[in-house]
Image (cartoon, rainbow, N blue to C red; front, side):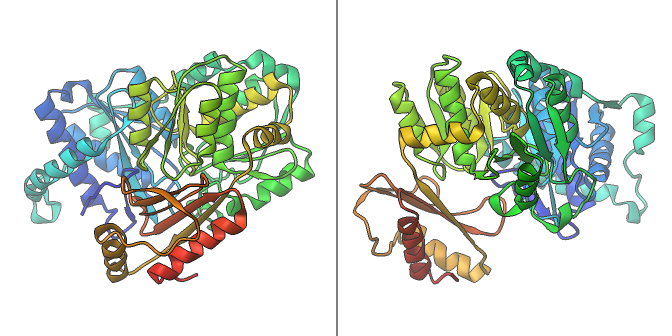
Length: 481
C-alpha cells in the first residue's frame, strides 16, 4: 500500500516498492491531473542511482503515456534538486523523482513535486492517496496475466513523442553559477574533496567548482546500489573516510551529499565534522552580515535554537515548524525568510528552489569561505564564540508495532512525561512531543516520517546534560540504551 511520509513515499524494494504499486501511484497522479485540467502540461520525472530507479521511471512513463500525458524523462541519474528546479522553471504543476533519499539501500521510493518546485504538502499527498482508491479499481483490467492489453511499450511512447528524453542539467547549473560569487572563489585557489556517497551529485558539484577554478578530488564516486555498505546519509559516522582524506590531502573543505543530493555534510580544514546545524547557522550569518540580506529564518523543531540567536542579533525572527521540508518551504514563502533548514542536512535559500538543495548549499559554503577570506574552522569558531556553544544529542530507536503503539499512547495520547532534571518552560505537541527548558535547552521525541524509528533530539549547553535528558526519556519509555 502506498503511504506518503514527510519525504514522499518510501518502501522496501520487493515488498511494497513494486512495479504494480509504482504503476498504481502513477495512475492516481494521472487521474488527479486529469480532474484538475493540468494533464496537458505533462510531467517531468527523474531518478537516482538506487536499484530499480530507472526501471521505475519507465513503468511510470508507460502509465502516463497510456493516459495521453506527456513525460519529460531526465534520461540519466540526477539530483533531486534538478527535478524541483525544472518544475519551477518550466511552470509545471507536477514532477516526480524516484529516490529514497538517505534511506538504506533496501529502500526506494517516489517524491512528488508541485507547482513552484515544492514538495507535495499534506493536502496534496492525501489527495493522491484518495485517487489511489480509484486507481486500484481501474488498474485491474490492465492485468497482463489476465490477457488484457498492457500499457504501451516505452519505445513506442518515445517514437510517438509521448516520452521525451531530456537533460536539463546545464540550465540548473547556470542558475546556481549566476547567483554565486565565482570571481571571489577563483581568487582563493581552494582544494576541495567531494564525497557523493555513491550518489548523484558529482557531475553538478565538480562542474560548478571547476568553473570557479577549484582543485577537486573525489572519493566514493562509482555507481554502487549498496552505497558501500553504509547509509547514504552524510553524518559524522559515515564520513570517516572523507575526514581522513581532507587531512591527508590538505584540503580546505570536504563536501558530501546524500544519495539524491538534497542534503549536505561537511568536513572542515582540520578534519572536523560540521553538524548540519552548524552549516545552517553559518550560512544564515553569512547572508546577513556579508551579503547584507534581511529577513527571518525557518527551522524545524528538531533543529538548533542557535539559529534563533543569530536572527535576534540582527533584529530578525526565527520560525519553528514541524519536521518535513514542505513546512519549511511554505513558511519561507509566507514570511519571506532568508533561509530555511533542518538538522538532518537539508536547507534552501530565498530566491532558489522551494526545497532542499545540497549542491547549491555547497556552492554557497565555498563562496562564504572565499568572501570572508577565512578558513571554515575559523568561521565556525567565530560563530561559537559569538553565540555560545551547544551540544546536540541525537538518538534513534527501532520498535515493533506493539511497542510503537505503547509509546504513542504514553507520549502523545496520555501526554505523560518523565521527571526531568531541569525546570520546564513549556511543552509543545506540534509534531511529536517537545519540551522547552528554562535554561534555553530542549528535547523532542517524535516518530520518523521516513523510517520506522523513534527519534529523540536534545540540545543543551553541556553535552553531559543532553545525554542525561535523553537517558531519562529512554528509561521512561523503556527504550534500549
